[in-house]
Length: 329
Image (cartoon, rainbow, N blue to C red):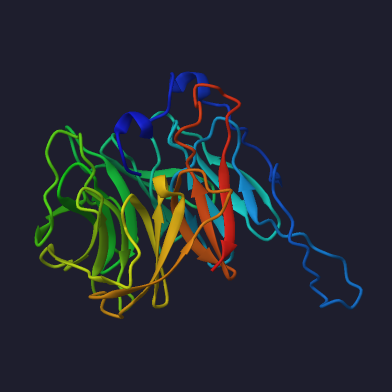
């Protein structure tokens, strides 16, 4: 999530929109598009529609994404922090966590069936049961001017960016999520973020393909950095052959491929990246007429699932809705 904060926050009172998303039994997703697939390979079996888009409920402004290996998609709302889960095989979904105010921004699944959720300007990190949606823990990562934006699991735990402060927050791996997050200052070649919350610095975060370091996009510098998780030392990642991380929001690494979601450019730039993350080469740019200020993405089932935050929509209207679309890799 990047850009002037006024364009990144919901318009109007959250109280009007809270509760607009309907929880309940799994139900077909409105607006899901079928890609008709025949599980019997054309031998007369029933055609099972598979969605290539997931519509989130009215009044639910999605931003982050996590997808399980079994194809369950999770996204959180900037309006009130609610969390929505959908089955990508059937196109059915429901709200599993009804928010109470603090937004949900980036999120990832850990190895213990939990969602780790960045809480935006609340300065919070939340740990949520991915099955029943219970909030298992809430941590205060930062006070004052802060924006806990995105998260990746790896390098010994979970790492969160703060777009207004040049730090990462770290929760160690393991079943115990009661420990307070630790703060790691970003240094080395990292471009400092002007103080005061008027500029966006660290945003999307991922692991390098070899799992030994972190990749962080810096919106203020419009640059990608490789960060040593032990020291916080950052080094710029050269981008060969063109491409850009300008307006870079969420990052996704799949094998040796890096996807950079560029929200206000309505595009995803694709790079081949070295195993150690020290260099990247531009491959192509993905555009889609369905992109609506895309923010984050995840790879599943041979497709790239892209969240539309629709920042320019009128979120003071409780009927406003958005969702997640997919496109070929």
